[in-house]
Length: 399
Length: 69
Image (cartoon, rainbow over all chains, first blue to last red):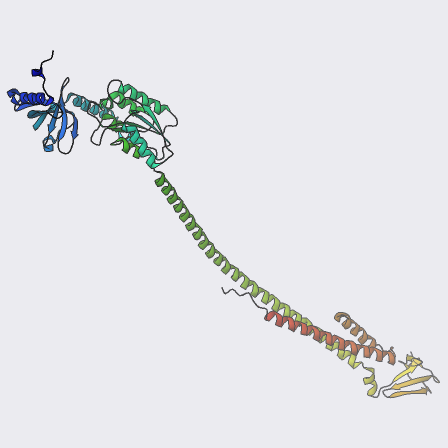
């Protein structure tokens, strides 16, 4: 069927549709209730979807202030008007007023699960494990495509070249996501060489995060033996595993930053340890030297005293020795003098010089009158010579 | 000759000199020997005294260990 009269341009149709929406009285000043999702702020306007179980509407709010106190999952009542945007052919609801309208069903469930698990102790700080300071191998449960794993690797490589990253690919939203994430965590937790596990996904809507709000995943994270870092969505998006995990990173890049050690920093730390050890050792050495020196000095004083005492002792002993030697010499001298005097008094010449004479018969001394008889020839020796004479008569007592 | 032997010999000489039986010549010889021996003994004694005084002076001037550092 071909009729030129009914051939319309896109602009004509868009203008026509726009006209319908503008003219429809039912839609003027309308208020709609639903749950906020897919919230995005472009700076000039805030975009979000308003949804219920089966339907969704795109909304635009040019006044950011209207959305204060509401966010993801909030059940709201919005007032405004429809605008059909010709350039994109899209229908949007331009919001002029926002008020809270109960809470979203998913959000209610989220709050209920969170409260229950918190009461049970799954969020307890005491249960949280310390992240390793120097993780060698990092396990990641995330989608194998997309920016998340790329960001994690990029940050890791900027910090060091030696940490290994093992990815367990898993669906991170929609049907089957929970089972895959659970399998990933359990698998990596069972690997001996894995030091820490990152569970990550990029930003999304509150619905997209649902796998991370499930009790099943929360319990698996709680029971894992290895430390787990959660990194789901953006800074302000909190999911239940963020509370259960041993550490929560606001983004996957931050998670990588947290678990991958900084090579440069580590080297500096080691260098500072070495410096500390060196300074403490050198301090000890100088202390030892000082102590030794004072000890040596002390010993020196002792030794000096001992030597001085010994010197005094030697001096007194030697003094005694000299005294004794001098005594001996003196005594010897006296003995010698005595002897000399004795001999001197018996000097035959001295005796003869006093007029005495020695009488000898033959060569024998005449000591008694009995030694001679008259007629015997004897020699008389005096100091200055000798004379020979004959015995004429012998008198006196005969022996 | 050693000093003690010298002294002993001098004693012998003194005893012999006192013995009247010894002839004059013998007595003279003994006397001369005694005088010589006494001289020798004196010189030995003075040598000993000299040695002692040298040792004493040597000991007194012996430099003691200096502890000043």
